[in-house]
Each structure stands twice: as structure tokens, then as C-alpha cells.
Length: 371
Image 1 (tube, helix red, strand yellow):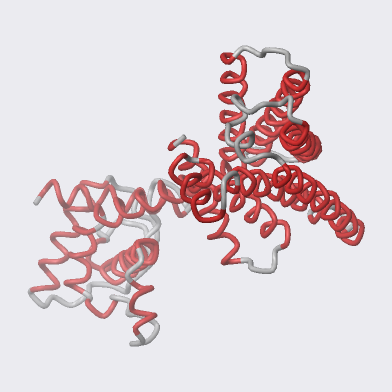
Image 2 (tube, rainbow, N blue to C red):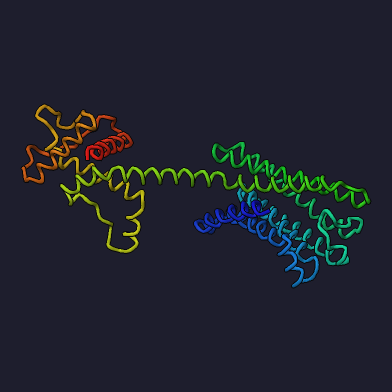
């Protein structure tokens, strides 16, 4: 149960973060409300939360609140798809009709719960006396609506999954399987309610298996709707770590060039606190260091080129370039004038930016090894 609630809370936190960035996105708002209702329903269902609510509001209130929250969760899930439809006006009309349906079901199970004797309504799904009409209607009515809403949502999810590309399609297929699994579990529970209402004994292990299956399906759904976002965050984290590592590896080359040409160090756009804070970001520091190293290489190029070197191409290995850089730095420190004009240097590994960065890192590593 703790793992189940943790998965829901993690999914809700991610959607709240997205909603904060796009507060007017109706589909996103719907799926966020869906997860919020689902997450709120489980603390109420736990023994401590249920007993607390029942003590304050009366016996059976926690069970009623939990089921109403679940009805609202699947309703908002349907709204997500309805608001995402191509015909926005038709989607809004369908959402209003579905609101009437879920409202009717919620009122009906509330009346059934309030009219049932308190002592009969005390048990859980596995122990409740389904021969009492109100109890059978309470569980059966809620289960049938959940089956309907989850089945529709699963069908729409499969449709979107077929239209999407990876990694979005992977998350959608996970969510579709989870929704379909929940619908199947609700259908089985409805059959169990019908059987028990006629005083047929249903084995406890079967009901426990259905409950476990339902929990796994919900976890799979929660994982599916956060899959693409989580994967993007992981990719972003890997890029952040790579830039942080490369920034440190460029330090020997940067130190040598900045010592010779301190004016090449780029400053924040303004002395404002926000600009200074942004300038300390890993990606900004990484890209700034690359620019500073390239500018420094242009400035120090007159001291690097021999008489037979091309004015724009320096096709030597990293170790030789590191040696030339150390000699050039010593000459600059001793005050020797530049023997020629500065020229941009084309590195030997390629003309794209990534090859350029690899060459800079290789030279910096050679300087570190020599030191």
C-alpha cells in the first residue's frame, strides 16, 4: 500500500509541476485532478484514516468518501480525453453530460450508504454482507461506473498510442494496459457482488487476487502517464552531469588561457541577483567556458603556429598542442610580442561543435597529465 501511494504521489507531484507551468491547459488540469482524487482516496481507505474520519463524521463515512473520490477520479480522467479531442466544443458538451452521469451515480450510492444499517456497512468489500440490497447497490453501482469510465479511457488511450511515436507511445501503451486492467478488475468485482448478493460464497483468495491485480493496474497506469516526462528528466539529468564533468575537465586549458587573456572571461548580463544566479547554472557555465577557451585559442594562436603551419588549420595531436600552449604561455608571461596576426584555429577532429569540444577536452587532459 505504501508503494502504491508513493507512486500516485510522485505522479501527482509531476503533474502539479506541469500545471504550474501551464495553468490554462484543461487536459492537464483534468489529469491532475484525476490523480489528486485518486491520491486522496487512499489515505481515507487506510485503517488509521478511515477510523479518524468515521469517528468525526459517523460510521461508514470514510468508505463513502473513498468511493466518491474514485468516481471523480475516473470522471476527470475521461475529461482529459474529452478536452483533448479535435472538436473542442463537442468534447465540452460530452464532459458536461458525463458530469451529470457521475453526479447521479455519486448521489445514488450516497443514498444507499446512508440508508443502510451502520452495523451492516461496517465491513470492507471482502466482508460486507452483499445480501443487503443497499450494500450490493453501493458496491455494484460504483463498480459498474468505474468499469464503464475506465474502459472508455482505455480505448481512447489505445487510439492515441497508435497515433504517437516513442517515447510517448510507450507511456500511452502502459497507461492503456493499466486502464484496461482496472476495467477488467472492476468487472470481476461486479460479478462477485452479483454472486454474493444471491448468497453465493466467493473464496477469499479470489477477492484478494482481484484486489492485488487492481493495485498493479493502477500503478502501471500511473507509471505510464509519467513515463515520457520521467524519461525526459533522466535525459536532462544525464546531459547536466556530462556538462558538469566536461566543465571540470576543461579547467586546465581554461586556467592557462584566462591567465594569459583575463579579458576573455564573460560576465553576467547585469549585476542583478537573478542574472548572477542564472550565470552559475551548469549549462551556462559549460557553454561559457567553451566560448572562453575558443576565444583564448584565437588570441594565443600567433604563438602556436610555426612557420610552415597553415594560417587556419592546426593538424597536430593534443599532446603537441598542449606543449605549444605551455611554451606560448611562458612567452606571453615574459612579455614577448606576438609574431604574427591572430587567426581562428580549425581543430583536426571535425568541424561540428561536438568534435570541437572533444578536441578542447583532449588538450585540457594533456595539460593536466603534463602538470
